[in-house]
Image (cartoon, rainbow, N blue to C red; front, side, top):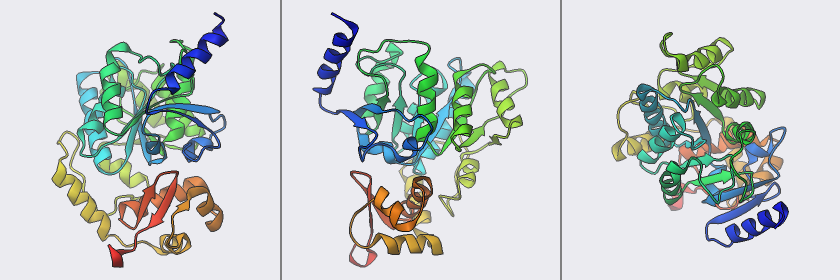
Length: 326
């Protein structure tokens, strides 16, 4: 059987399974931020919930050879940021990536997306097959631009990294050597106009040197999850985050919701609410109506959603919430 025939059969078999999806660039479920990058994937293969691809995402990446302290930090940051409303995106690799996924799953209602460098008919690395199942079961997604049947290839992972950053509003590097995939992801993020954050470490730790280089090159030094939220426009105005290392719980999530709902929209956001009208509206249509880019609109909609003023719907649509009838 030729390679083309083998891949065609693998794709047909894979798509016949429930919760397996193929998204083209023109599809309304295709992530709008990813569509803006210089080389967006023509298609995305998705296992799980495709709706999470349009949620506001924060990428957390780092070394496969993470220290125990680095893995704990990644889990704590991911849990706090997921509790604050971000979907956590990473690469399903060993080390920091796996810790980030697990941290997001630890948060109440936390969602996470894993971007892979192989076809989704197999999980790489194999030991993370259970983690991939957990991500999907929690309402997240496993994503790849590579067709089912595509084997492991070193050249695929830099391509995967541009998708991780392209999906996200910002990238946090926890630990990284000076030659690592995490730094490639950060470089893609800078080229794509995304925010880059890095956590400093000991000068004696080789997997801290990549973070130190990023900070010298202009990445934002962060010590707490609150630092990231502040830099991303105060999306959670009034919310006081605990220090990383403390477990978020349902009371934390409830407090976050109360603080967000208490915030009043500014004039620009009030104008956006007025432009939305009363019926569900697609993001593309709303961007045209308001004269905003998809990136600008996504940030504003995130703020309004966190304030409880709009709700996201299937098909990249949003609807204003009428508080007088709810």
